[in-house]
Image: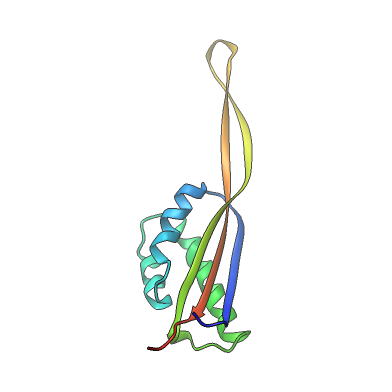
Length: 116
């Protein structure tokens, strides 16, 4: 891999890390043009936010690093756990149930691929 790379991240995405990782695994080690097409037509709800993060990383590579967009690949797409909101749901006979609403962090790195 080239030493020049650009990063973008989104913290506190309102989805579980498991669901986010399903989408992130699709675009790992893929050319950015192909990854954008995959995310555009993905049926997953969170694919829209992953696409925004990828577009931000591409813009960072072009404007801040001066990299060529056509030779970029998604070198890493990392998913991490964030906070978990805890809620309460009233149930029958005076009982209650705990509801957890997980959040995730997404980190995308794009870099130029080596020509062979």
